[in-house]
Amino acid sequence: MSGERLTSASQPISSEGRVYHLNLKKGDVSRYVLLPGDPERVPRIAKYWEKSWKVAEHREYVTYSGYYKGVFVSSTSTGIGGPATAIAIEELARVGADTFIRVGTTGALTKSVKVGDLIISTGAVRLDGTSKHYVIPEYPAVASFDVVMALIEAAEELGVRYHVGLTASSDSFYVGQERPGYRGYLPPFQRGLIEFLRSVNVLNFEMEAATIFTLSNIYGLRSGAVCAAIANRETEEFIVDAGVEDAIKVANEAVKILSEWDDLVSKSGRKILTPSLIGEWFGGRKKR
Ligand code: URA
Image (cartoon, rainbow, N blue to C red; front, top):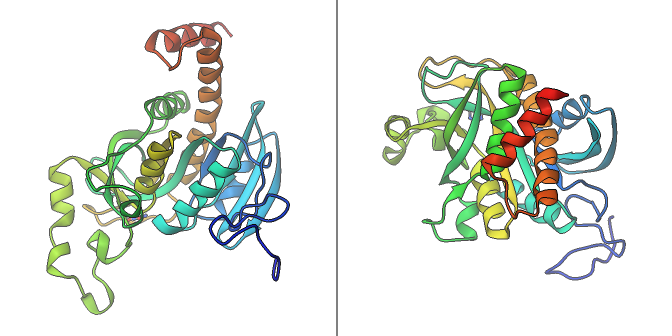
């Protein structure tokens, strides 16, 4: 790549059609892309696929593609936070992805969410900076209802503990999530943030969902998020990796479910998934 001349400064693509950061071209990835933050989680996600291959690796972006229960699927790491995540969404959309599921870790705000439980986000409070570059602050960061439903269905099928609700996405792990910074630094405007978010029914803190949801809505793409609560800000517990394997299993299964629903929608001639189509699907699934 070094020294290679790209198409232009405003649309940096290689002569082979590869996007600059992710090093992917059309055909490399599925329409369904699972998005962990951590590059090491990509092969962990792919180990559940019957067939998988590494497509690209550049900076924090590792991409695998493969087949899960017969469905073509991909996974790309986003790195941490809004800026890196927006690059992933921008470039994945350019190479044909249209459905994103974040598979992340999170800090729960209330003790009703146990460490190791999953949180499926319906929307995200935009405490990030990246989405503000794209759109007015009043624009909502909402997940797609069909992706949320597929994640809930998968969590039910797998029998894991999960919660559904609002998330807050911050660009800062420490001070922006009301953790004392170095030498105990915590500015007055961050004090009380956790209490405030709890009082308005926000379940958890993480760092990427708001960017994924906002960009997906702007571009007419779909997205959702399932995160494992590795920390609890009320009980002060923090268990590395707690629940991550469950989040991975739920996200993979949600892709399978969503692909079945997408087939039903296109066969039905409807534009969108309806409760009656889900009912039909469920009846058919029970018979199998
Ligand atoms: N990720 C976060 O952003 N916050 C946490 O507390 C845990 C994981």
